Image (cartoon, rainbow, N blue to C red; front, side, top):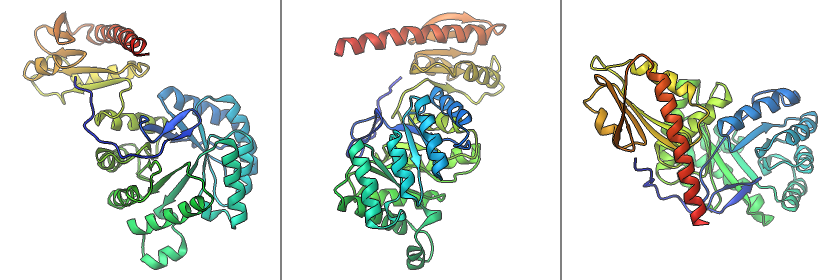
Length: 370
């Protein structure tokens, strides 16, 4: 399968969130946000660990008050994935989490008070090598911008973002990333396009409050897909009213579809019809559930009949074509006939074996290039 992306990424400054690079030539990182009560340290740590297992590169945690800040410090000691603290209005919270080892501050400089307070936070970030994320949202634009534009517009989002950027520029602090999120796809896309032309910093993409699992996935895939295809975006968060783990899965699926990241199995499957020689939908559901733990990039085709089956199967790492009997191709070559009786069990076994081989091959290539 041809895995090279045709997308020319926008050139941006590289920053580091913990050990994770964002921007420059770094892979586009996938992040989510906890929805537990931050003061419930055990529940928050458990959720972060689940997100990390799902592949999260970065996790954001809301820190609304000082009690949450102290809890954040305990949480930070218990996890390895980089953590972003989401802070609004109170600069003292930012100073405290900086002391407690935060990896990034999500804070809008213009919202935390006078110049002295902004400088205190920026100095703390500079001293500890902590980047900042400016996060502009259509639902919380400044009152004067609401009055000026009458309603949220791409231009209003960008003007708000550049106001916050100006604070950091004035203090000679370049290590930040910016988001200009809206729940309207076109508004968000146009705002990011405009902002991408005006700053060199990396962009954090998101369609905010996108919706439930299905509708939010579609809206995010459309909006983020438009931007990513144009080379815009360095880290993404899919906002879903669902288990945060789903945000990570959808984020990686979006990147995989554009060949921007390869992680886990990329399934090619037919929607099934009366020609199918096995139950494609049932087979796919079972395989996806069973193989969620596999992180090795692998292209797997599951096609129910011989019309498109052989053509698809020959182009992937492992492909199943329905027939009498069903036939499995490995690396484009017919390898094994499978009956319907133990189809999923046998397929799972073969996919895991192929993944192990691929992992060994990839490790050998990496070793040779070092």
